[in-house]
Image (cartoon, rainbow, N blue to C red):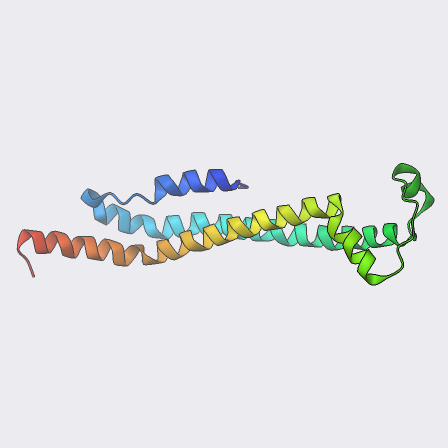
Length: 145
């Protein structure tokens, strides 16, 4: 179940609603919601780990490319007339590399998804208290203490 951030947000918009007329049903749904969003969290976490691995492999390839250590086929496909020797210049080339930047953005996107999912899971953990408070409020309004 791979979802993008917009799909997760839409799903949570629907799932976050607590039906105050059926608090007993809402209470029973807590484990299901937890399982749903924790599964999504785990999937995104694994995707991020894979993306980080891809980034590290590509960073090594791009280092070899910029330092002139790649194979001749690589340079025939993507010519680069220089050999970068010093660390500062290498860092500038690596930081500005379009291929690496794309993976960095992907990792930042996964980070945003994980933060959002983490907040959702915290809300689900607090849902028991929210439901209890709603029940206590109904009791108070009905004159029970």
